[in-house]
Length: 322
Ligand SMILES: *[C@@H]1O[C@H](CO)[C@@H](O)[C@H](O)[C@H]1NC(C)=O
Ligand SMILES: *[C@@H]1O[C@H](CO)[C@@H](O)[C@H](O)[C@H]1NC(C)=O
Image 1 (tube, protein in one colour):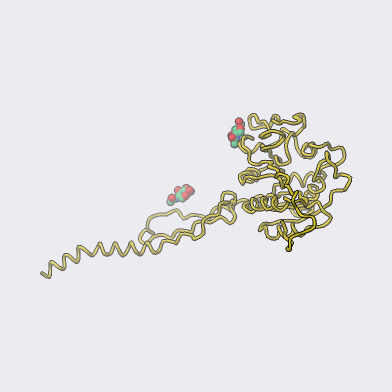
Image 2 (tube, helix red, strand yellow):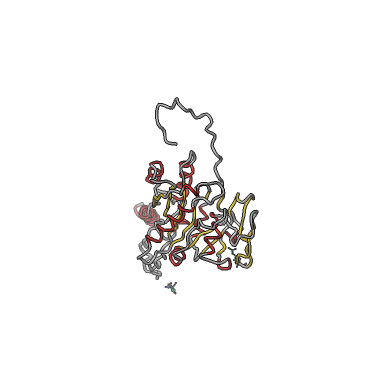
């Protein structure tokens, strides 16, 4: 009787030990992170991305020869993307800038340079930027009255103010790598576009949707080089490309200190060509977006709003910012 009990005990003992061991191992496993990875992780590069916690070796296995994982080599600094956005007061301004902020907020290491066409910073834009949740610079410069005519290029002074700020900011220090692009507030930007432009070495180009009277315009690419332009308007331009279709490395901006958008002698629609001619050649352009076969930015242009029923005299009892 006694020996039968004892043998049963010895049969069960290993099982009990195994169960105890498994429970122990299970509680040692690190808890999964509570917060899901942000959607922008692919764009976050080496910064701020969730790194999996180091795994502790299980007891009893330490005898097994294991390759001690060395710390990964430090990731090269992620180039800062500078988005220069000229903007002016109009009924849809806040809606447009809100759409842009919502996009830019999801891009790592983006600095928004917002330049108002105004004699002073407006409260609407100041408040919007303060709440936008991203690094930003708020500039303003009024367009001279003589240039405010239909048929003349727009936002020239504002883009140049953005360029001047960039050059001023980096005048002493050896610049951290950066990429600049002109982010007009009437466009829609895919997050993928920022991934593409981030690797710009000098000047990169890509297609733009809903522009030039076509579904899209694009640089024509052969063997990885730009050889021409698919465009519906003045294909003879040296760079037949929309403002939303290129990015320039900060280094190129700094090493061409005189490159600006010109008023004098500039024809409408030639702004991009006039500017790019000063800093690059067609042969040098770096095609992005799968050799310029993907549309990642659209010239959406919000419809002009109808305010025909806006009251002239009997206003609302509260003053609401729109
Ligand atoms: C450790 O990793 C290095 C490099 O990957 C490899 O050459 C080496 O053979 C590994 N050693 C062991 C013990 O696995
Ligand atoms: C672009 O075209 C070149 C030359 O045909 C090719 O080597 C390269 O892989 C292409 N790039 C992409 C992203 O498809």
